[in-house]
Image 1 (spheres, rainbow, N blue to C red):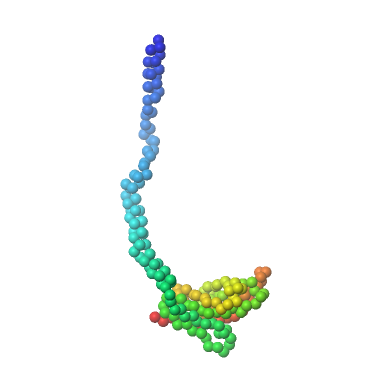
Image 2 (cartoon, rainbow, N blue to C red; image 1 turned 30 degrees about the vertical axis):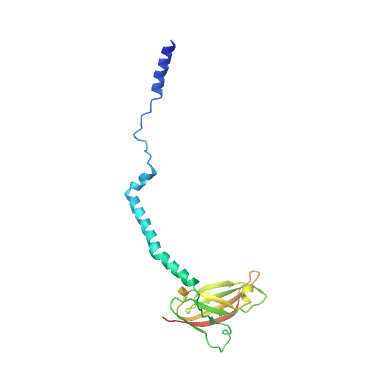
Length: 185
């Protein structure tokens, strides 16, 4: 009887442990690496390779050249605006070559009632080009200000120096400098 019970148990276990039939509507899982067999993947890999080649052939050498130029010793000439706010003085002029930045020496009239200062640059057309914030400690000395080359064209520019009192009061115009820029070759 034990042998028959054991045989019945084994027969029933075989039927219960038989693998389940596969469902034909079930989604098959793909391996990650089958993505690389797709035609779109080849196009994407080729595009990424083109970007890497462009960076290594064009962008990085140009950036290295610009960094080397910026780090190399150079003689810089600055146009002095010191004293040019008074009437009757000749308008300072800066002669620049194309792509050269403009350097200006500027004195900020200081007063203890101002918590900060602002240097606002205006184009020959009168529109505001850029502004630079100046702390009271910086304003105590003559400032060397640089305007990037891409912002500069030939014409008469102006620089307004404004003092900002504390407490949310409006800024006070302290000085107005005008200067001429001539772009050569």
